[in-house]
Structure formats: structure tokens, C-alpha cells
Length: 331
Image (tube, rainbow, N blue to C red; front, side, top):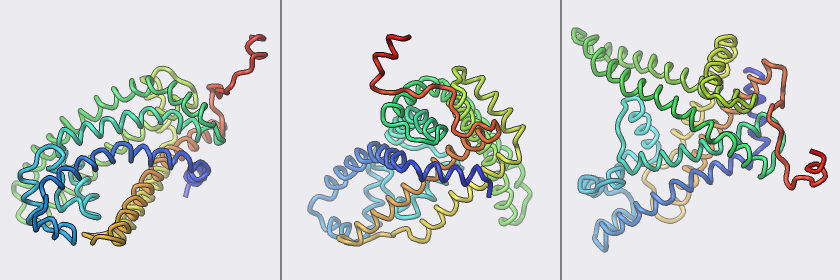
């Protein structure tokens, strides 16, 4: 285990308010969609017999009927959303570049923008490794929001090339040619899995570059996101072994969280206590996933600072409130 990884976990655990905050952010985006879905289900079920079976368990025939006639958000209400199936469904949609309904894309866009806003405050808090209070957090979030929006534009171009050009090229054109003469299905599956691995590593490399670009922008108070991205690539190249080891440690943490959820994920529960238990397990998984995301940022920040021998150093001065009138008079 790398020291930056352990330091990152310590920094995240030392700021539990940030974890609760991003969890609240997740609820802020997801609860309205859940309420809308509840209204659609209630309207479709009414007082029918299917309502009784849906409340006591899972009526797969009715779920299929509802999904077939639904539009927008309703088409996502399928058996694949139950328990660990939702994780596998999201993974399948990611690796196969499957389009989601417009309403889901819109909600995801809002969620991403909110994360862009809080990213500066989160990384600033972990970089300083001490409480920055509410004023300091939101001041940093506001300062870096527009910088990170510019960085997001660069990310969009890169990911558009990856998923809009490279993914179809590899999986729609190259893969069929590679397995055209393959007689064994197991071999074809192994080839596709290898292509998934290569593509996943490429996506992970790009994600790491943009993560370190955010870290450099915050720690060094950089205004040019192109410069921060270029410097992030240089940092990873100079510290490739340490950066790769840190990524593997963080990814192993992510895999462990997913594996535990696969073991504990509720199925189609009943009403009452079992329903609330399933909800609680699902929320614990969401919190654990968010914790891993924060560990990624905190450990990458710790690694970058350790290479510069500047633990807890941030170039931008920490904002204080209220400002001292004496200090203003002196200036």
C-alpha cells in the first residue's frame, strides 16, 4: 500500500461533513426522479390486482408491460434495477456505450455540474488537510467552478472521441473482423474481454489525467486548464510507478465495495421492515461509492503534494470571514 493512499483515506475520514454533503447532493438529484417514478407507477397500477402483487413482491409480467408502454423515465423501470442488477446494468451500459433516456441524461448532466461546482472546495479541503469551514469551502468552489467548466469542455472532447469514435471503431468494426473466423465462442468472448480491458485502461488513464489536472489547478492556483492538463500528464509520466500503484489501490477499494454490495444487495423485498432494510443497504452502498470517489481525489492530492514536499500546502490564500477592518485599512 502506498503512503499517499493511506494518507488519502485519513484525509477523507477526517472530513466526514464532505461525505455527508456529497451524499445529500446525490439525494438532491435522485429524489425528484424517484418521486416522478412513484407517480407514474401509482397512476398505472391504480386499484388493480397487479398493485397487490407489486406491493407484496415483484410482478415481472407487469413490470414488462409497464416498461413497454412507458416513455422517458418510465422505460428504466425494469427487473435490472433490482439489487445488484442495477450495478451490472450501469456497467453494461458504460462498456457498451448504450444511450440512456433523455431525462436520465439531463439529470446526470445536472449532477455532473453540481460535482464540478463542489470539486474545487473538496480538493482544497483535502489539500490543506485542515478544516476550511463553510466560507472557505464555498469560496474555493466558486473560484474553481468556471475553471473546471473549461476543463470539463476539454474532457467532453476527449470522451466524445473515446466513446463516439474509438468505441464504435473497436467494438463495431474491429471486433467482428477479429472473430469472423473464430469457431469457439469462448475465444470470441476472451477477445472481447481483452478489448474491454484495453478500452477501460484508456478511459482510466484519461480520468487520472483530468483528476491530477484538478489537483494541480487547486494546489498551484492555476488558471489555464490546458496548462494544468499538460502538467498533469507530465506529473504522471515522471511518477508513473507511484501513480499506477495508487490507481490500482483505489480501484481495488472500489472493487471491494462493489463485491460487498453484490453479497449484501437486497433482492425483491417485501413491504415493511424488509423494504426499509433494503433501502438502508442501498444507501450504505451509495455512501461507500462516494467515499471511494473522495479517496481517489484525496490520495491523488496527497501523492502530488508528497512529490513536491509540500504536505498541506495550497498556493491560494484561505479566505476568512468576517474580514478584519484593520487589515483592510492597512492594505
